[in-house]
Image 1 (cartoon, rainbow, N blue to C red):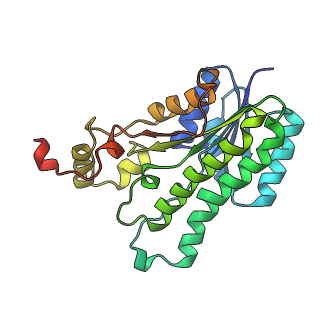
Image 2: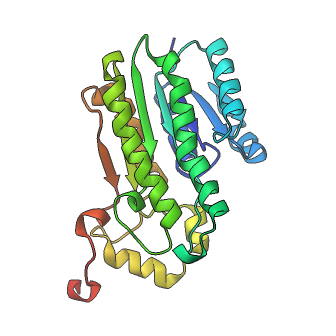
Length: 249
């Protein structure tokens, strides 16, 4: 049987691009998203996929789709915890409700899906790739909840690597920098775009496909001795820290 990958937040953006990357490599792909209409639309015509409408922040939803996965495939070779929500605003205006909404999906969801996946991976090993963010590595304004949730995902990845290695299960983390998704391009003003270009050594946004390639590598056998690592796929954004764009001209 071909290898089986589970991807959450698979209906758009990085999740969809990564799903297609796995399919191109001959894997079976389980696409999970809470947006049922979008998931149905993007998965139509894709072969070797199982589409599941579920909310990863809800334990009952996770338990139910893991039961379905076990019945259909009986194993998982890779789990990509990509589902996430963003909430940007000043710390003084971040209500506890907003804080919990971010944590529920970005952190609780990663924990719930990972924990439920372990029984399907213990026999043959496998790989977790958790999608954090550059905001989990470096502080930035307006990202109190989002950045903290992503920093916690990085630590959770280390815990997974430390505890699950004896089963041959690897765990790594990807921290994307600015990515030119449709959503980002719709909300980023030209001033924001210019500022990112100035701050990123490669002078551009990343693409969904470039992030998908990094994710697939960490799930593949080519990364068989890599675990407990955090990879910033960010065009060098994190490496440069806070700089003065004027000095680069």
